[in-house]
Amino acid sequence: MPDHRSYQDPFYGWTTPKAISLCVHALKDCSSLPFDSIKKLISLSETQILNEETTPSSLEILTKMSKKYSVSIEQLILIFNGFVHVIRLALKPPAAFLKSDTFKDDLRDLKFSEQIIEEFHNILFGAKRDQLYNVIQERDRPRLPLLQTFDWNLDVTLTTASLSRCIEPLLLFQFRTTDNRNLSFEVPIKKFNELRYNTALLLKEMEEVDGKQALKLLET
Image (cartoon, rainbow, N blue to C red; front, side):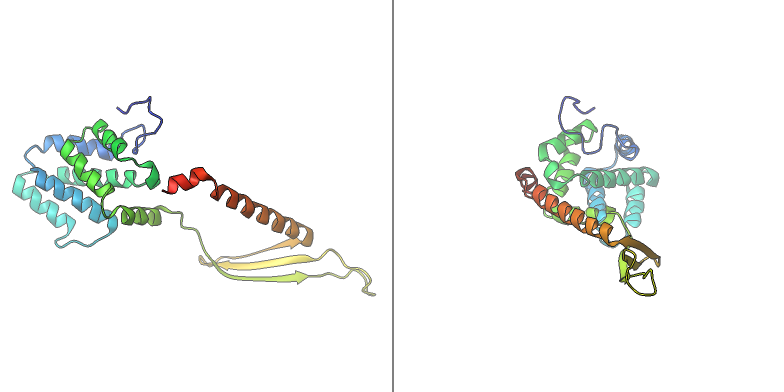
């Protein structure tokens, strides 16, 4: 178990994910599987996350490996799935928070061998580190509808036939999103000015936070 006195949570959280636990048990049961094959499974895990095509396919490689070393295909899938989970979970925190030594210690807590730990380390801190982070961030970011069209009008209602006075003007906003929804709402001029002010204030505060020295250190 991880050292609860530390100030940083393990990259996988305080509870061992089931996929990783099954992977570790499957590795113990597959003692006949040579390390070169385990290394190949770790490499396939990286390929899976990067969505790179392999020839032959991952399933074909697992099937061939199963026949060659008399290991059930189910056990190999558990190992492969666990390896994918390790890499994905390690890539979830910002890159600045994943430290080399801490990462290795977390893997030791999960009961992975030193050889496997070194292979994971080479992937997470290797040449494709930035590419892996970019893929995970793009895949896991929220997918919200985008703005497709936007129109607005100023609605002025006159109160008398003599045109001497008018009710407070209203701004009418109409827009369509990429999920084919049409939305509209009305805002009084006074409220719209409040919105403009609060938006400008929020942008100013965001610039001030962005300029904090602590955040700049995290990016390095």
